[in-house]
Length: 321
Image (cartoon, rainbow, N blue to C red; front, side, top):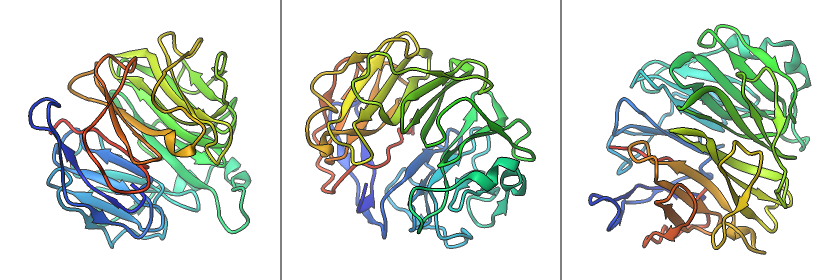
């Protein structure tokens, strides 16, 4: 959220919901990542406000003052190690902690890729940043970093070395992989969503049927890499947003009516995440602060009876705790 972070909890399978206390933030939430191992633990990257951690399912949040830079744009809780976490920074760097954020080490090889000298940003007062971080399903050695603006970078050895990937637009907004297929990657960029079926070696633009091309967020179902959701708009100001669903890996798209579309940018579905225990269920949040749930794999949606009381749901992660 723009003004803080909180947990929204259901103890009865979604029949009722309770909102936890809001932890105020000095800046907007950029990314949330819930640990698959330490089920009550999650991390928040909060732009210029640094990194936060919760160990009680989002009831309380601690600022990790040990984080060594001013910016935190992306975060990835290690899929197998409950104490390890990765954070993407600005200028584009990646930091790793093996002790829940008490100490940090930089992946020096990340900035050493030859193409790093070409990374940048649209504004002269800002620099390139790691907009998203992901690990390939079943292989913690394979890491993907999406850079705004700089493209996709991949490591096959847990971060010891990195390779710049070519074949797609370099203005990266979101990276997503499905547990159903480790070599399938979806990326949302400023000109189109893309798909790779070979671990990022080659890419296909998947925008046939989309009325908007500025893609902000994309996510495939954890049990079906062909089922994917994407949110798009006319431009970076999120004008006239629309929300789409595909069942054929983005070769065609169906508009999802009634949610995530409208003339107002606040209608845009800016963050969504699949339930790790129930793959038929997916949750989403809009730029206007509304939360939604779909129980039929993203085909239809219902508003949750929760008022987060803030400007926008800028980041969202679903935990099975």
